[in-house]
Image 1 (tube, rainbow, N blue to C red):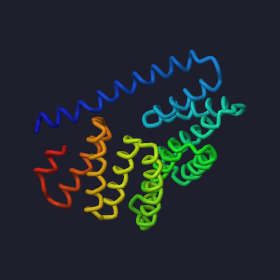
Image 2: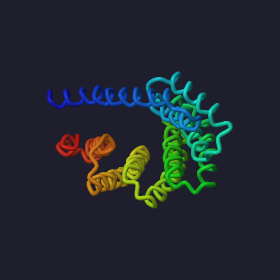
Image 3: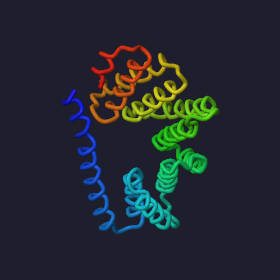
Length: 232
């Protein structure tokens, strides 16, 4: 047990180091960028990385990105910006506002037939609807909406054969079904995500999340403690 606890404690520090290294690299690239489109793209990436741990910095770079894209003719960039803003609003638990901005991003991606952008936007929208349900009386309605958007994301990720995206969708499916107390469906979703990771030889935090979430199903529903521990 001591070894397990030590491993779990070490993970966040490792991820934090990688996170800071990426931010340093992006900041340096942002400072050196010459044209406005390049700076705007880097501003969006910085906003994404700051989103979870520094909302002030995320807001700062989103504002910079907006100013730089006013005159831009880069349509992909103009769609990526509201997608990043919607993620920022979701992180602030402003779910209704977030959904509206996601819809704006989806409309822009549809015009360009940007499948990757559509997949990401629908995936994040599904997560927002799931979070919006929370523990209130409308959790079923929000969960069904979340499933609708996740299924749309699944279709787009499948078209472009995005294994990482598919893993995230199946992880989200599992969480939603778990909240609906449909545990066999949750188990099936997590197993599909793990199979995709194995076939693509992916070993990263997304696979870790899938196994950790699956362990909860074995713990809470099947009461199979040995299996739960082995997955953790």
